Amino acid sequence: MWCSIFRNSLVGPIFSLNGDRFMQLVLNGTVSGLMDELPLAFLSHVWFQLDGAPPHHTSAARRWFNAELPDKWIDLQGPVEFLPKSLDMMALDFSLWGRLRSSVYNTPPVDLADLCRRIQKA
Image (tube, rainbow, N blue to C red; front, top):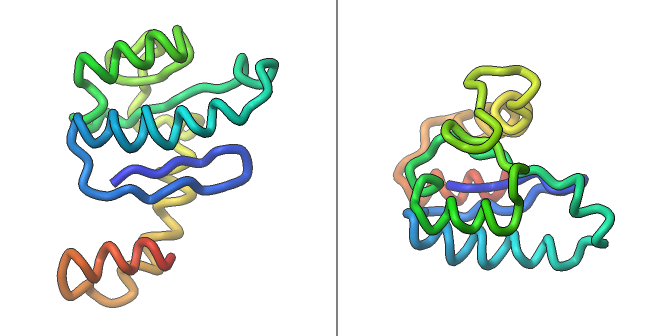
């Protein structure tokens, strides 16, 4: 699953990602669309943080990041190294996922479809 905090909004969630779907739906779809809407002056302040998930490590994804956000992306092997468990870098882990977790897992999900519905609702 992928989602993002962009400006003051939550983008996503997008489910069932592999490397191809990450490129198609997230990078070439959602992220490119959001970046196209930003004023050029604002783009210099955009950073992209990844969490080490396998879909982020395809050669196509790395080429996209290097072309679209040179030196402005954070990953385990990116130009800015991802620091696991850094409180400064983990807004999604400690804010978004923490809130979602308490809502989504209030009772155990019945199946994967139920889990996805709960995440979207939350």
